[in-house]
Image 1 (cartoon, rainbow, N blue to C red):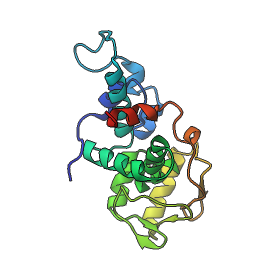
Image 2: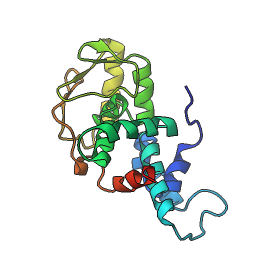
Image 3: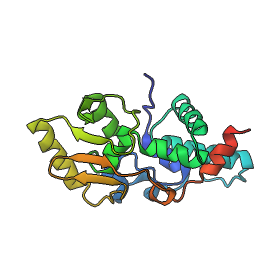
Length: 208
């Protein structure tokens, strides 16, 4: 399966916002976007007038890169969101938030979504008692995410939890610190995902 293997800090600089692709480094003074806030490349400092299409494209790229998806994966998620009842933009954000790799990151069991994706692929997690090793697996309301029992894994997760303890955990997730178990209490609302994302621009882009 193909994946992006380039420098992830350049992605944050290109979008002009922190995408938290390198975990705790993004929250420190070593963050690339803090040290070099201009876009990457020799022409990064130039001021460019953004067209309507450019704004739509940048919003899609920002969201796609934030969750670590490639174009084909992201478009497939959008198609699924479009077929669901309700508002397409909100459906898209909820589908991305309910990915198992994102949930692992959100509750602080991984420093970044990239690390969470690797842990899922290595079979660290169960959903409702069944092993899941697909990072794109989407959980539903009342589903329970748990960790495969192992003293070594538990010790490693405790180390990660100490590093991510400052991260704010969403209210729609119920997390048990003692057994590293997460329950989907309900689906998230827009403000609990990312208030800065203009998902309507992405809907308009795919509606062209």
